[in-house]
Image (cartoon, rainbow, N blue to C red; front, side, top):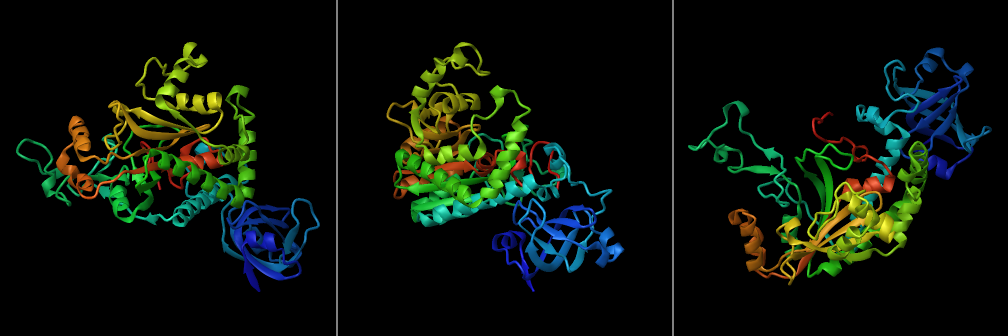
Length: 477
C-alpha cells in the first residue's frame, strides 16, 4: 500500500486504490468524518470512519490535534466540499491530544494568543500557509542567484565590526558577569575574553561579502542577522534573515537593475507555486480588513498587489526630487505627516516612503542619491560631495524593503569618511585592503527576508512570518 502526502493524494486522486496517509486531526465530526492535514497543503483530506466497525476506545482517542495514520480505498466523495475521501479500513493513533488542554482548537484564535503558542501555531491554516510561502520564497532566492552566476557565501555570525555603524549590537562574551576582569582604568578587559577582543553578533554580512565579491565576482549571503534595537513595533525583529548580494564591476544603475529583476523573479515564483496558500491568505486579509475603516483598507487585494510588483517597472527617483514632491504634498502642507518635511537632508520615514509609492507614483519606487550624512560610511560619495550613490526600493504597505549602494572604492575617500565618523581604522584594515589591492567599482544591497515574506503573505506583523520571533523582553522557545 502506497503512502501519500495529502497534497499528492489530492493532486493525483488515484480513485479505487488503497492508500495510506499520516497527519493531524483538524476536526472529527459525528464520530465519523475526520478532516486530516499533514502540513503539505492548505486543504484537508476527509477520511470516513464507519464507527460501528471500530473499537469505541480507539474512537475516543480521535480528537483535534491527534496524530493518525489512516489507510483504506480512495473513493469519490458523496458529500460537498471535497472531491475524494478515504474510506477508513484501518486507523492507527500515533499520539493523542487531550481536548481539555490542547490549545489549537477549531475556532478563531487571535494572532497575539498564537504568538504565545509559537510551537503549535504552525498547525493553524494561517501559519502553515505563511510558512509554506516563506519556504518557497527562500528556495526562489537561491534559485535566482544560482541561475545568474552568483556564489553563495556564509559570512561570520560572530564579528568584531559594526557594518552599519549604529552600535545596536548583541555582545558575545564568555566573561563571568559577577567577576568581570577590568583594566587599570576600570573598563572591561576584553583581552581576557574568548576572542581576546570585543565581539558581537553580526548586524550584516555585507563587509565580508564585499571581500568575496572582489575575488569571486558575484556572491550572495542569506543568513541570520541581529539588531539590539529597542523597537517594539510590527516591523522590527531582534533576529531576522538578510539577503545580501555583492557584485564586482557593478555601478549603481546595474545594482538597481538587479534588485528590480530579483524581486520580480522571486514574487513570480511564489505566484506560480503557492496559488492555494495565496488564495487562502488573500481571503483571510479581506475578512480582517472588513473591520477597518475604509481609508485604512488596502487598495489592492493580496494577489493583485503581488502581480502589481511583478508587472510594473519600478520608478527611479532621486532623493532630491522626492523631497520636493513630499514638501509640496497635501499631507505635508496640511500637517498630516507625523514627521513633517521641511528641508533637504531629512531622513525619510515609512509614512513618506508609502506616500510616494501608494499615492504619488502608484508603482514601486527606487530612490537614489541620498544625503551622505544619513547613510553609512561605505557608500560611494558623489561628485557633489554631499550625496552618496545609495538606493532604497520602496513597496506599497511597507515602505523600504531593500537598501543598497555603490560601495566606495577609492582608498583615500574611504579613509576620510572613516576618520570623520571616528571609526577605528585598525578595526577595518582588511576592508581597506580591498581598496589597496585591485580595487574596482562594486555594488550590493540588502533585503530583509521577513519583510518580503510579510509583503507576500499580507501579514500585518513581522512577528508572524518567522517561526520564533525575537523582540524586546521576549526570547521564549
